[in-house]
Length: 295
Image: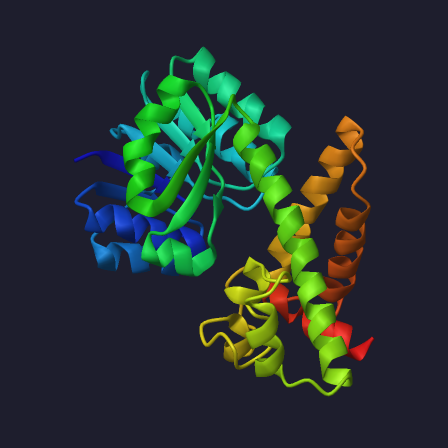
């Protein structure tokens, strides 16, 4: 069994770390939230005193952080993980960040004789807890093969996307589709309401017809049809609207930087800007149906 450092054990990271512990790995965790660390320690983890400590005397480090700036600070800082880790350490960054940050950090790790992959995830908090996440893994083939046994404990689909940064590219594109499709499903339900269709009737038809998609079948944005969706839990975040907005910003920054036309991605970003600025600050991204209903 491996000795693993885990940095960032919030909503997603806690479940991921718990699955590593259940598989018999030794896990040392760090988070700015003492409560998050305590929850992992209760599951059998060891608390690290700093990000550098989390990377000391371990064979691999997993990180799950909010933004590229946080990844850069954790990895590249004077007291960061690259300064503390020994040659040959494997780094698995599961954050969703910009491609440039992923490539810069991985390049520094390689220069210091370490391996690194960018491995953003899809599947939400439920997938993290259940160990059914999809990992989109960018990096050298050797680093991917080294990371795969660890990722298989936390996920169900482990896909090598290509060179460094391509995991982030895949995640950015995936979440742009997700943001667009969720808005489409929400608009269709609001229209169906106005036309006199009940939610369950709408779901029963569309979930087996050409309009079916993950945003409908698995994460239905109205209460009733899918009992496990946030719509049945007062839209408490499984994947927050703020995180969706962050990912849509990443998609539009990438589109601008590489000359891609993403009109629907831009429209989705603008709608989530309005939602997060208002009632969606602390809500799940599917809760945008409530803003659409009122508009």
